[in-house]
Each structure stands twice: as structure tokens, then as C-alpha cells.
Image (cartoon, rainbow, N blue to C red):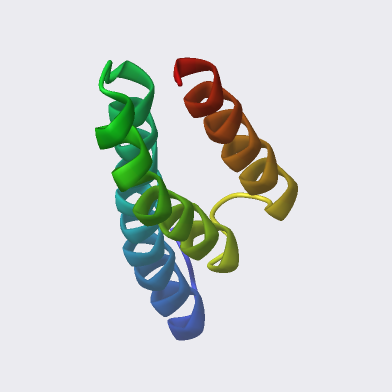
Length: 84
């Protein structure tokens, strides 16, 4: 266990941040999965801007790397273009 007050605070902060990061990561993965599993092209195209925005937000917060965000967005675009 920590011996310093500042370290106790750091532990509390880290736990809060970990939970928030898990929430945004899971939300992003669910949104991507929803697009990948849908069979309706129009629905996928309508949801794409929202998911791309979500991926950008998660990358900006530092939860995922910016290159991973680019790869995810690229993969979604390819997937939707193949559906059409």
C-alpha cells in the first residue's frame, strides 16, 4: 500500500480514469461491431459518421493510438464499400 498522501490520491485517480477508459473503449468496439454485423447497406452508411466521430474522440483522449484509429476507420470504409 502507498505511504504518501499524494500516492493514495494517484491510486484513486487512476481507478476512475481506468473505468472511464474502459467505458469509451467498449462503447467504440460495440459501435464498430454493430456496423460490421449489419446486412443493411443504408443503415451502415447512416451510422458510419457517428462511429468515425466516436473513434476520433477515443483516439483524441489517448485511449487508442491515432494509427489504430486510422486503421479502424479504413477497415470500416472498405467493409461498407464491399457491401454496396
